[in-house]
Image (cartoon, rainbow, N blue to C red; front, top):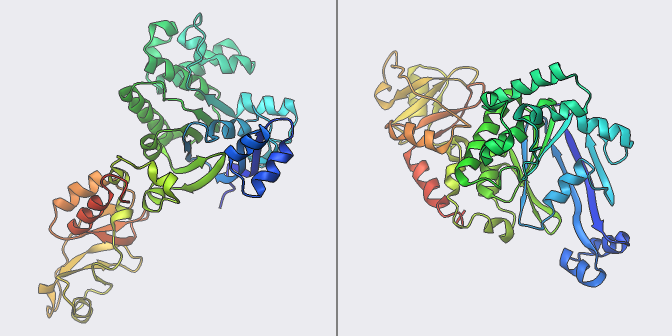
Amino acid sequence: MKSPKVVVEGLCKVFGPNPKLAQDMLSRGASKDEVFAKTGHVVGVHNASFDVQEGEIFVLMGLSGSGKSTLIRLINRLVEPTAGKVIIDGRDVAAIKRSELTSLRRTDMSMVFQSFALMPQRTVLSNAAFGLEVAGVGRKEREKRALEVLEQVGLATFAGKLPSELSGGMQQRVGLARALAVNPSLMIMDEAFSALDPLKRKEMQNVLLELQKNQRRTILFVSHDLEEALRIGSRIAIMEGGRVVQIGTPQDIIANPADDYVRAFFEGVDTSRYLTAADLMQSNRVPVVRNLDQTSVAESLNGSAEYAFVLDAERRIRGFVTRDAIGSASPALKKVECISRGAPLEHVVSRVCANTTALPVVDDEDRYCGSVDQAAVLKVITRNRGGAHV
């Protein structure tokens, strides 16, 4: 298995003249508010540890003041840590020289902020090429690269315009293009879409997800919006009071919220929309048969089941047989539609409703994992509506 792209170990940040005093209180179980009340020190992050895998969108989320923005500034060392390590591609960012850190930021790490931070007197093309200009890339080469990324975000035809001539959503696309132009392997996005209206925000999420399909960059994305986190995150880390209280896939967190703080994020959110076939499937609902002969079919359907899936030696679906086949010298094999483990709820519902039998769920290599039927879909949707009852 490949090493993680980013490793955070015991990361702490206390703002104030005597951070050790605050750390001692924290280690004895004091909260961020108690530390501030007694010492005047502000706890930004306390004892954060996690890995970020290459190619994933890792979302940091929490309420305002939870520590998420401080944490990403520790990761790119815009803020110096009080304790702990940040390892990117095997290098401890907290320990490297300033010159090496500057080089890392210019060539392999980009940031996209909530404020678009575009230079008003420069064209869209010039803004998109700015990071390459700072890195010393010649004009012809940097403009060629900037035009390529503007094409990717749908703004090539606006290359000669000024930022003031663009809408807010288009300006944020320029900010994204500028970050992409240096071809970073790590992107840090701090509330990047939160200044946009809901429609533009969803549009930018779509742009990011589409780019991610092809480019598979590692993205650290800060958000306070649960629906955004569930929509774009490979995994989500939820922060409270400077601490990381839960890390997991969207489905993990929906199914098993760590505490009432995490559970409160789901109030009023229809979490069923973020479920996949893997969350709905049942492993033993439908019998399976390996050999298509009278004995095997009879054994697999000796209970109340009306049909059984037929698998090959590598657990791939060949089709299904019904109870009518019992006693037949050559049982008839019927075709069945398969559903991918990662298929979203909407797709699962449409396919299950169009079939009278359960449908097999398969992994990326088409191996059988379980099945999903109409009863399972109804049960999960009913349980998840409203979020608070997860």
